[in-house]
Amino acid sequence: MKFVTLIRFTAQGVANFKQTTKRAKDFIKHAKASKVNITELLWTQGRYDGVIFFEAPDQETASAVMLGLAAHGNVQTETMTAYDFKGMEKVLSKAD
Image (cartoon, rainbow, N blue to C red; front, side):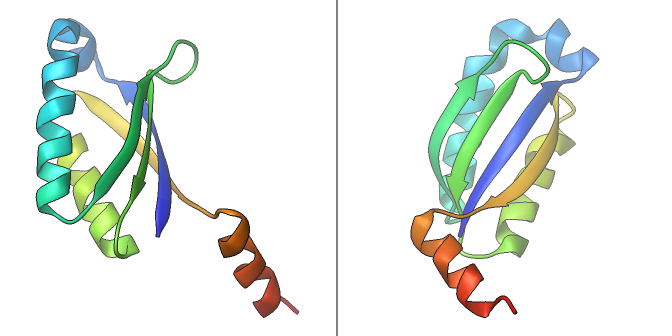
């Protein structure tokens, strides 16, 4: 399954902004150990401070990894299930 997570730094994350790339590397390593593939991790300017594109075997695993990320206190996350063309066609085939 594919997912997109929007990231916002907390006050703690802003205070420790110089460690953001180290934290990201640690997160990618942890995610991989949980069978989650981070396909892209980007820092952004504007309403959100970052975006993570990833694949996980199921929603429970995706939720667990994102909860683990947020538990460190540096970011708040908002995760959405994402569908590529083929996945959306599968959804549409099940719609009334």
